[in-house]
Image (cartoon, rainbow, N blue to C red; front, side, top):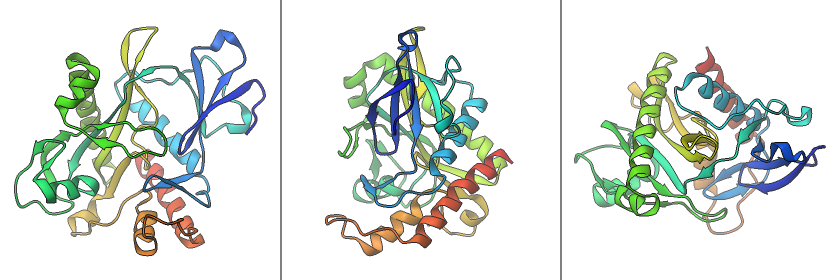
Length: 281
């Protein structure tokens, strides 16, 4: 997409980044959330209508409610062509760590626990079942891979080796703090925040650890309906789990993926929008 006054600099699985042509704003980047859908490290055909706007609304909601420095900036106006699904953000010196926090056991954490009794080196109680609540939230970092590559779960000691002791401890402390704040808020909306991931960087202007990227969205987090969870339902969530489930039933994860059916796309779009409505009340 061409945006007057901006030049395209990068595209990830979901987001596109643009730089202002005005050199006075070299310290900012325009982050545009697309409707592209990624699952099992693959970008799939057919976008999810309204997904980019839903992700942006949820991120802005949490930036308004969390007590932590973030990268959002109001110095420059978002272009009209991407209004509602984009934000201006400060450029950060990003740390290559996915700061994953888990309050419940599910997904890749459940798979690792079954094999080793641990997640990212953290020993967990025996006898846990898929979807169980953990005794307390745990920090289970991953090394952030290049686009097209799979992130690698790592231990806290490995995190220290990558970013140093002080930064590693700050990443863990802030991630757990934000997770606890968000979990308490989600509870009031009848939701469970099962797990999520954060990305942080250093703000060169202030030398402060700063929250970047999307935050607590359906793409980066696993939310469950609390009433359904209490009834023992463990395969429901407000994200792309519908797509994951369909792909697992219809794709070998090796060949060219099949095209997503229209009904699966429509159901996924409804889930993204419903999460924002639940959070915002």
